[in-house]
Amino acid sequence: MAESTDSGQSTINNPEGQSGTGNAGGLKGLLNDYVTLTKPPIISLLLITAIGGMFLAAEGVPSLTTLLLVCVGGALGAGGANAINHFLDQDIDAIMSRTIKRPVASNRISPMHALIFGIALNVGAFFVLTYWVNLIAAVLTLAATLFYVLVYTGWLKRNTPQNIVIGGAAGAIPPMVGWAAVTGSVDLPALYLFTIVFFWTPPHFWALALMIQDDYAEARVPMLPVVVGEERTVQNIFMYSLALIALTILFAASDAVGLIYLGSAAVLGAFFIHLAWKLKQDYSIRRAKHLYLYSLLYLALLFAVMLPDSVFHF
Image (spheres, rainbow, N blue to C red):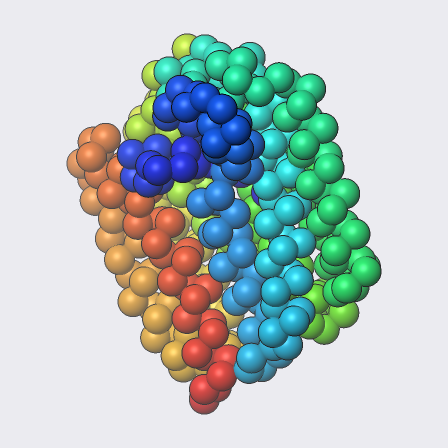
């Protein structure tokens, strides 16, 4: 379950979770840097999607023990993937102004220590999920890590403006993990949840890329705004937003969700499209930031509403 935060700063001021402070010194500073490697806010969002998948699969409240174990295993897997990301992106992070203070980029943690830490967390995640949940959940979590660090970070990110479109698959796996943890299988509703997060990722990340495109250009990372410009990027954001909302509404035609979900998806989606349309009609960094921040809230609320929907299903 895979992507950042500086402890003490919100994702509003620190959108990808880079470390925004120097080393405080001593054991406390070192621990803070290791926590920063795992990117806790991103872990939180991924866990919300996994929990939503668990509630839908259980058609109510899942086993609290399984819920806890999935959260522990998912957090370890995602944190490990993010730590390895710091290792792989150390050269880029050292160039970009928003990431230059990250623990590895600023030499507060050695690259090899970050890599070992990330691998160790993933080994722990695989053990927890295999031993106490099931093998499918463990394999899916490991697959998310491998896809994120090898396919997205190691290959796509530096080579194609479609990097986040394909690479977003890694962040779309957690709800499948949640579903598999309860059912022991991957069924059609789990694939729907995967697809929803998959289509959410491009408009979310491209809004962020619009805000920090100068950094990407400086590091020669071919994010969409750098390659095709702002106008084409906002057009793509709008088209993906329409597809995303259509998918969330279509999901309501299945037996997996009910009217609580449908009403919430319609309201949340309408505002998402409204912000994407405003960005398309009158581009500005401020509008891109509004869409980026709302996209975070949107995904969290969309999956959070699955909890009451599964309990009071009608």
